[in-house]
Image 1 (cartoon, rainbow, N blue to C red):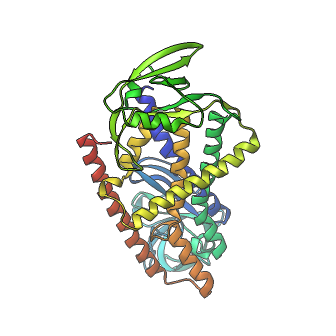
Image 2 (image 1 turned 180 degrees about the vertical axis):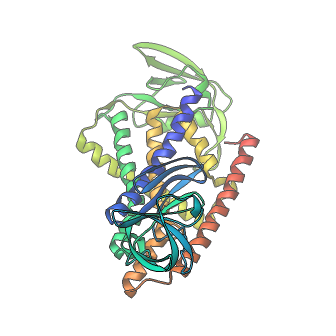
Length: 431
């Protein structure tokens, strides 16, 4: 596969997984009537920015996630104080724009000193205009303009905190949930691409060839029927005998008899010594995975098998979390965005089928990880909402914000460490 295509597919995987997660937050926030100020993919400086309706859609420099910025969750509204001189533009008896600076440059506006203003509940402003107090209604979607930046006001009923616990919890949970949905759909696509094993298979095929291993440098192809290895006939159900023989043949040529397009071919492959991930012992490997003849999967089979795949992947993910909590890992075992992108690129080079399966795993992992009770993640926010539901009143928002800030800082610190580790690994040529 051409390198440009591999890079494109790698970027596409991350873009789709993050976008579907943030879209879940966005969609259910909008359904609850919350003003969504920004839908962002990535963090840091903006690369692209476009505004549609009330929301600004941005693509940012650091591709390590995304966010949906809702009204009431950030302090971006500029306060207007009594005694401050502002200018307002009035359309159909309502203020549609409030100008806080460069007042002399504004045309078709009313200028005056603020006597009273309420941008959340009464939506009104009273100005001293040439010694006369004038009161104006403010449009619920009015814009505040200062320093060249437009910010839509957020009446109290458009703010995140004004919604019920259920509405807020749904808007938060929807992000991880959409990752679960995407993972299920991708697994279903993977099953449709690969099919299901036929009943009572009578032959063994080459199902996978690992890049960088001896098989990848040989004439062996995915889909080849394996008849024998070193004269030992391949029998369905007895593949472990061949695996054992290869494991004991490091550095020694092995002879493979395969069938391709109806013709018999003989291929020589020499296993190399590799550390087995399960036994941690050094054994011979050539980088081949076995498979069996398949048939198309029915819709029912696809749904059922997708559920089983999701269950197995979930168990594997939590096994990884368990090792992390118990300290059963080395720093080199941890990988950040750089390593994930590297592995994704390697899998993309193997074809769309493998990449679909990997994308499903990444989407499921992102959904599960975000539900962990770690400050700044969706799981922690759901816990705070649960406490609020039990107490009957919210916790101190300043304390909650502090907890999330500390959690975010810790996650970013870990991200820096693992990314540094990833970069060192790349320079050392390790995989």
